[in-house]
Image 1 (cartoon, one colour):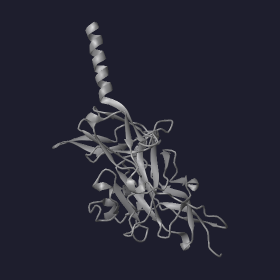
Image 2 (cartoon, one colour):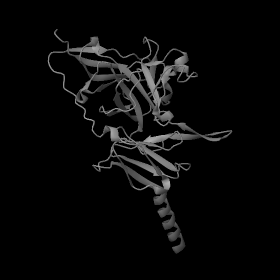
Image 3 (tube, helix red, strand yellow):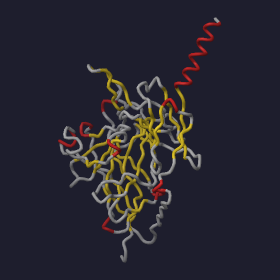
Image 4 (cartoon, helix red, strand yellow):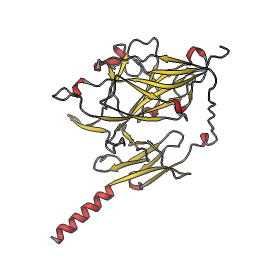
Amino acid sequence: MKNLFWISLVLFNLNLIQSQDIVIKDGSTQEAIAFATISFGNGKGTFADDEGSFRFTKELYKDVDSLFFSSIGYADLGIAVANLKSEVFLTLEADELETVIISAALTGKHKDRKQKEIGHDNYFDCWLPTVESEIAVKFDRYDGEPTQITQLKLPVVLEESQRSKKGKLRKFSTMFRVSFYDVQEDGSPSRKSLYPSKTFVINQTTEETYELDITELKINIPNNGIFASIQVLGYTDSQGKLIKAKKYREIKTRSGFEKVSTTYRPLLPFTKKIEGKNTWVRRIFFNDKTWQLFDLTYNPNSKLVRSGNDDYGMGAEFKVFYRGK
């Protein structure tokens, strides 16, 4: 019995060593950095929760020897697993230390305007959300006038195969993040942005369009437009807290085990009804997070692109301040 006790104690301590919760903090303020990005250097990664915490365990990430931490406005940081501690501190990027965002509130008479979202219920023409991908849609000023975005309209699809034998949709709860990016000279989203972001949760009770109120963010559209992006962070628990779990699964193939990113619900319907190219995508853990126009140059084998469904039909509501009218 004594031997069993000591063996159990040793195994317990080994588990503590190999599994720990890491908190990512601002190196100056010591405050937690919510939803920071953690990359494993092998094309996969995860996100911290709203308290800057994520769980690292050697049992789940056997082939990971280094972690790379990043968040908007902070310098990227790489740490070897052997040197990992319970707290990780990020520093502000040098070229952003003096950045001050002045967002003057648009006041006066305005008119409410809408840009209709475009969705459908064919899940074969949908984007499959994973934590490694981000989708951005450009919005221009309405009628060229000073414009504030007050609501985003996000079309979604609840996949039929997720229904139980009784015909009811299986329960899920997925956290997404909406972020905003300036428009660069080449028409792409900027790599970094200090616009505020917002997280929200979608579950099986969501209608065909999720309406996200962003009035409090005071997002004023610049002269050359702005990008709004949508990105999945992972599943949540019943209290709406991000679950600390691996975001991919391992599939056995002839050449060994291959990591496949977890696909989250709901799906995002892409459409061919939008003129021109309006949707950009990027892989969070690949290609230096570079944005790419969603067309054949991004992926010539994409069924969505080849079928012409190369835009996400995100809609919006605006307050438009007509000058001199």
